[in-house]
Image 1 (cartoon, rainbow over the protein chains, first blue to last red):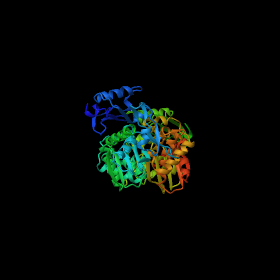
Image 2 (image 1 turned 120 degrees about the vertical axis):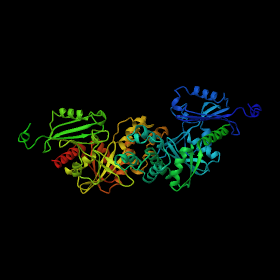
Image 3 (image 1 turned 180 degrees about the vertical axis):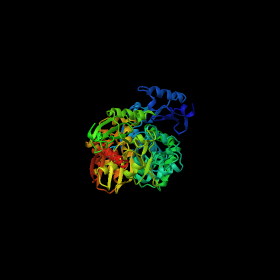
Image 4 (image 1 turned 90 degrees about the vertical axis):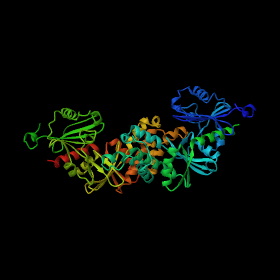
Length: 305
Length: 305
């Protein structure tokens, strides 16, 4: 161990876990933020059998070198109804303090899951789980300003408005899930086998998606392009991805007039959203999702000390 | 047989077949339109093995009482690339004469498949196969006027503009396929198990779909409604169907200012579209899809005499 541990002022590191649907990431962190160990693997929620979470958690600590954290904080789908324990959803507006006060304790004072956030305003309903820790972490680490507009692209893209340091509003678009379903199960499937790259086909789809608000019709062009003999689309997967991301960005940007949009994601996916955001006349700033979730869990860890 | 057959002026009846993806319908018709025999079963394109179409056709005739038609005309997916034979696509504008001249003959003068229609105008591509026979048949039988706007709801809904008796434009919306995919494969699946009925949940979804043009985001409410505790949606399947049909109708109606919309489909599905069309301030007229396809194939049969 090290001096800080021996002098007793640091009873152990923080274990920060982002436990998602199909993968997880974990970081063992000293109070000053130094990463002592980290891990990323495919043991997401779907791979953990019912009643298997305690065991999976113990194994995770072993894989991190027999970590003995003073506090373990878990964000993400581990807190869903089908996860380790249902950590519930907090109402808006929400701050990091609210997340810290609303933790779902698995082992009091030692292991907790971060709650999600919910919108229940008249005529709408929405939920997020995981992104709240990222955006409030990005705020705590000054990666985004106290008033900002952010996009978390993914299976279910989230567009988030932050007012005065609080999550004030958000909206989900089912972009990633729809693309995966179309690729696997739809009549378009045999045209969606290629890699999604940011070339002319992506751009053509993106322009259409940004322009029409009619993605559920426009998608059919991927098939009709071949059958009709029009043959303008080379890479159908890139076109369809561009169309859905364009449609997603069109919906998202309608939520806010902020010129700057913070895109919180892994860099390859973020780049496609940045392209569509900039094409819409806004500017985009990429923020690494891993750094944001670590910052969020560290902040919550400080608040429960 | 009957007098008309014996006098030699009627060498045999017309066999009209609507051969779809998952089902088929067939009618044996006297020249005056009287139905001598008919059949509807599940032997659609997907159930016919490669090279099995001649056999399936011979069996169909046996099931219609050993029919010996003077002419057999087939509309629908039998003419697709994965069907009996690829009957191709004609350009717009198109009339029943064009369909008759463009028939794909399996057995010259005796058995033919009706071609589809294609749009290849700059920036768009679209195809239809089967609906062209219905809409031009509805025209021939005076079920719709020579200038009209029609909707064919289904797996791939088609919105069709008819100018001066010709199909002038059309657009596909992937409504039925998307609903089936969401029901079977999406994270919303466990909320989409109910029957779709035209009650308050259908209406709530429909209002949203007609209003926003953001179906790929709005659909998530079906899940978030439960998780957030909002609990406003009773029948998730009806809500999602309403949302998609509302979004479909919003896209379709943007194509035309015609006050009257002819909905060509089976009555239960047509009723849901009529509801959304009327909510949009237009009026809707239901036309039976079976009558329309029979009228179309009869008209083509007259033109090739």
